[in-house]
Image 1 (cartoon, rainbow, N blue to C red):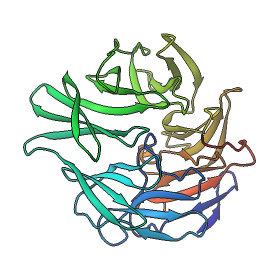
Image 2 (cartoon, rainbow, N blue to C red):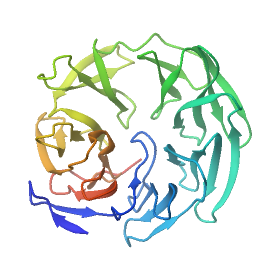
Image 3 (cartoon, rainbow, N blue to C red):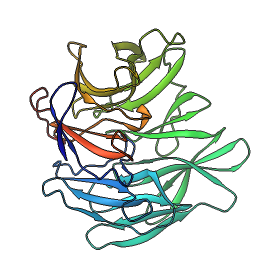
Length: 329
């Protein structure tokens, strides 16, 4: 359904039916075809959460899986776009959309807990498994085998591959650590601005880590900051209209954010050069964290999630009038 946004009168396209819940994977996982021609997402269209493939040109959607316990935070399109990875309960599964053939790559041992998920440029999956109190193993899984990368003290609650580098970012007890994917060269924790840290996201080049710094005083604005691990620097990038979640376009020149303000529950874009925001549309989501605005690879559309019309649904707003096109390398 296409409608004019009440706040800006820009055209917004609702892609899925709000009579059943649908959503997207986390922003740091690959969801789009590199030509911006299809999208991998999840839907409860037939009663339970399943992985689906959406053709963004024809609008045709098809279900890829029939599993009992899909973890939607682990849906990831492989770099070669031939397969999709996800956890079905304790089982890491790979499916080929073209044939719907699936295979099990790893099963979390009984009594253990899995946390975090990310995928490398070679298709390897990384996640953490806690087997004993106070200890976690970061594992690397491929079709051939699963091996330990590193044992850490504490619970790993975030894993994120650093783009264009063989490095992993992980978080334990609120601290962010960086190590190479073979488990060596573990660095000291990144020196982020003291205080509460919200969403974090690598820029597509992998050069810097952008994150939301949330002040203790709720009346103060949430800042977007940028950390450069290689240079050891951390600086303010811009003030935001109380961003709860954000995404970056392909060259990190523009950011799309979802405001947590109830009075101004908008999806906005912010230009890095001017540090100024522009409202795209209302999201009116009951929880702004679900919105997760995400640029398509060509930077010509922003996709987001909202339950403003019922259950959570996917929406798209085109931004070619405001953002230059990019090509994914």
